[in-house]
Length: 68
Image 1 (cartoon, one colour):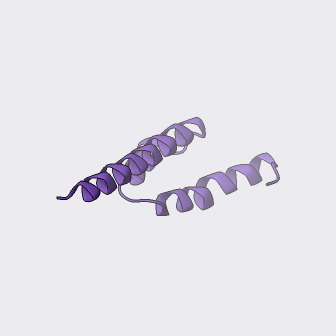
Image 2: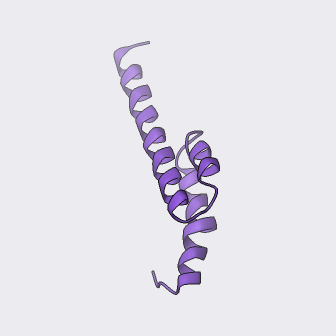
């Protein structure tokens, strides 16, 4: 691997790791299958964030009556 490929791989790893941590912490705060969302967040980016928004955050905001 060249140096640029290593840098890209490390950056991609850090993005996916940060996404997984965010999804785990936020899902735990909302009582919504934290382990599942954390693991799904470690698989790829950014699709899990988009799905999390539509399946967890949006319904939670509607339930609480918070406008966007």
